[in-house]
Amino acid sequence: AQKITQTQPGMFVQEKEAVTLDCTYDTSDPSYGLFWYKQPSSGEMIFLIYQGSYDQQNATEGRYSLNFQKARKSANLVISASQLGDSAMYFCAMRDGNQGGKLIFGQGTELSVKP
Amino acid sequence: DGGITQSPKYLFRKEGQNVTLSCEQNLNHDAMYWYRQDPGQGLRLIYYSQIVNDFQKGDIAEGYSVSREKKESFPLTVTSAQKNPTAFYLCASSIEAARMRYNEQFFGPGTRLTVL
Image 1 (cartoon, each protein chain N blue to C red):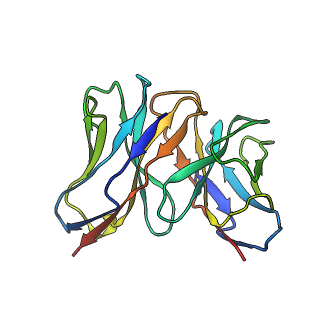
Image 2: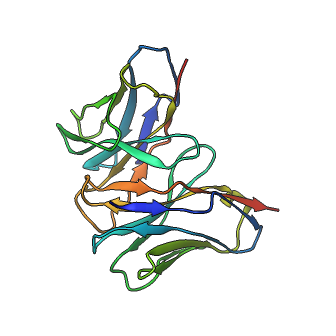
Image 3: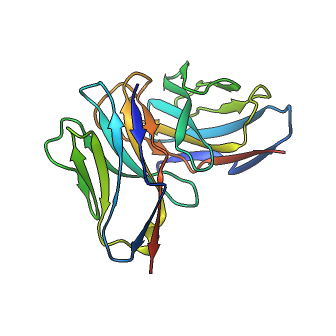
């Protein structure tokens, strides 16, 4: 069965520093997609970045980059130059092609940015 | 503006009552999903629909029902059979359900349901 694991319940980072949020996954499908979402205290899920299993390069979107290590089955999110507004829950998710493309989510990591 | 709307934002239910959560999208997306989030947890799939007049159970469908009479709308009913309905409910949509590659799901703002 497909599974996403986020082992860091909470993380602290100083403003303007970089932080890495860990995500490991398990799947037997050769083709899959990995997503990162941000959930602020208001509750909405905000899409940050996507990595496809066949993508040759690590995905980047502004201050967000994904450290994709296929052999290790890890897809860590790197946030550079942290801002106070980055304080939120962060979820790693994997697309399941068997159930209408549903997303399988990890437990999340709560990031707190200190001024 | 294109997007997904959910209503109400907060909902209170008495024991034994059925309640319906609304989800509407104007993105012209084929696929729609309902997820449930409990405190400190990730999201779990309740139901999904890939096309009008068709829907499938997700991982935790017991005590819930849905309909998909229009492409834009995917309401979720929380029935009295759902033993622990207090949670945050999120609706999502995507262009096409079956694609394996990039197909971002867009989420609504959510409905927070509390059973009194």
